[in-house]
Image (cartoon, rainbow, N blue to C red; front, top):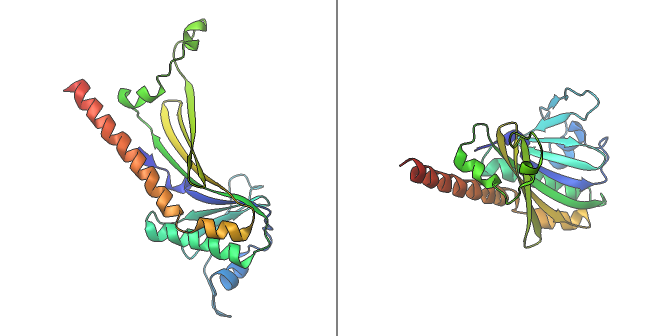
Length: 216
């Protein structure tokens, strides 16, 4: 199972004004760049030209829309996650009147060539396929489970689609203001990434053990 790092994100849900979140303003107000000093920014436009662009500055990328701000780390280590998290906290502090209703942290893992042991997680006690005439096998299946971890609701979706297995983790936090979001956000992004890594490593260990038992 491999992490899709380009889909790792920290999303602030609320009422945003994308016109404010321009590179020049971000450089001055969020990165405290001295007057006259340039901060290089890379702007990537989506294939769907009507969608919002992604801006990358100082090791953090972000995509602003009216109802959410998605923030992406640009390096897969603790420093990269902490930089993205601190960027979010600085924004919330600088824009305290922005109405924030929740924030979430998202991680996706995929296996393009799943073995029989991994596919066993989709063996549910459900005989619906035997009741459908001419059905030849499972094409898609999704299993979602939510669990409470303190103030966080962790949503895990395991899916099978077109031969690919995907694990999607969403850590969801309900808040009622930018101030509360800034406090709740601290030290969560990398910690939740570690939770996901530990879950996937435990699966890998179990699958190796099953494989040895079945083929030993």
